[in-house]
Image 1 (tube, rainbow, N blue to C red):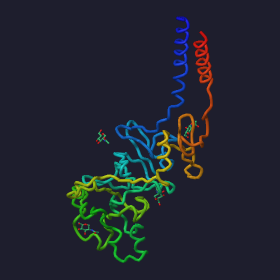
Image 2: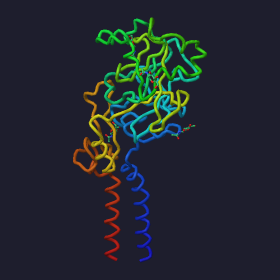
Image 3: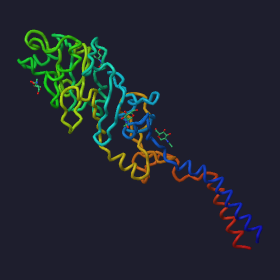
Image 4: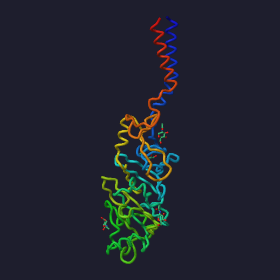
Length: 317
Ligand SMILES: *[C@@H]1O[C@H](CO)[C@@H](O)[C@H](O)[C@H]1NC(C)=O
Ligand SMILES: *[C@@H]1O[C@H](CO)[C@@H](O)[C@H](O)[C@H]1NC(C)=O
Ligand SMILES: *[C@@H]1O[C@H](CO)[C@@H](O)[C@H](O)[C@H]1NC(C)=O
Ligand SMILES: *[C@@H]1O[C@H](CO)[C@@H](O)[C@H](O)[C@H]1NC(C)=O
């Protein structure tokens, strides 16, 4: 009887040792959430291929703990991702601020690839202030051709922020322009504030501007002058088609991802629910799994055999 107990115990021990580690590894749901520095990168964003929403693929990169955001107009440092308000705060080192004005078309501006534009945009309460634009800039031509006689029109305040206030910044003393003379009388304004919706792409080359500044309101705080504005670009994001797919996937213990793609064409890119060992086109409770579900590994069979054998031995002694 003592030998039998030892045999059963040994058998159980072997089952545990042999079977549990591979089994739990197989059932482990891949994690797509990660960190870069102190910023959490979570759905719809990701730092790994196949993770997150396909509209946000090849967008964020973590380089030496610095989170970078890459779109067609250039690379920006991500200062913050606000998942509740669906926005990101971006920094471009060549963006003019209250303390310095950067000319020479070195700034990125802000424009996204057409395929990505439904997903990422500049926030409506973000003001772009275009600096030193040519008189023949399409900024003024376009509006002229649309029948706006008043040249003030393209340039306007956005969320209470505009060039009038920006001219009070010390950076303008240094540049030696600003308050003197009429800005709109003869030439184009030295600064023209626009919202992103008005022109859809801040491309300094195309707009023939020398530089730009960008600021956003840290709502709902009322700020007292341009030295208190937050300089940078506030981008908003939207998950096209809604969050239902990912919500259902996560509710059933899955992780949201997409099928591998190598071009920038949305056709053929499918959202996937990764269920640990299998991928589903809906969620982890559905029968839509594409692989591996319900198969028996040799270890499962061995474990089952050993349990049966030990039960049989126990009951027959
Ligand atoms: C991350 O760390 C930087 C300084 O290292 C700090 O300024 C910033 O507020 C932190 N961001 C978050 C989201 O904690
Ligand atoms: C599930 O999809 C992800 C992302 O495309 C892929 O990396 C992974 O290998 C797939 N897993 C299976 C079991 O097919
Ligand atoms: C900006 O405009 C120029 C000239 O029209 C064009 O060649 C360039 O591709 C544009 N840049 C982006 C990022 O769209
Ligand atoms: C923008 O606001 C400032 C200060 O409130 C005001 O002086 C200026 O006329 C406004 N500019 C435009 C273009 O509306």
